[in-house]
Length: 104
Image 1 (tube, helix red, strand yellow):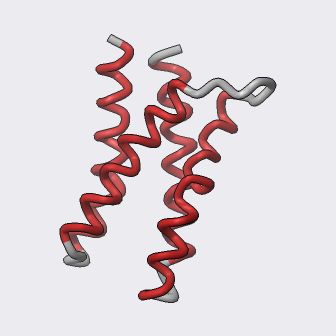
Image 2: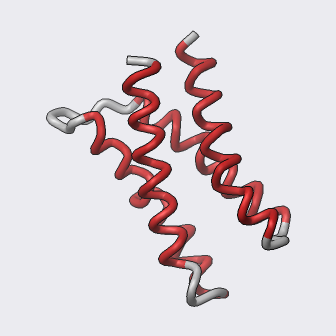
């Protein structure tokens, strides 16, 4: 059941992230990459235990793990780094919160 809930959280987070991307008519590769990032991030947040780290701080794995993608995207679009960083921090925190209350 926890696996199913984690999948659902990841899919919801992924959809939240890609809706503006679809509206902006970004390419399929970027949209797929962003969606899969949030699905995988959810499993990282849910199943990673970091000693002494409060549950809500696990959401900061979002911007940390997004850094390589953010750097690569900033090469093509200089204005994209800030929205990507903010969205990964916000959705990472939302994922951590949802996981804490629904799974743990």
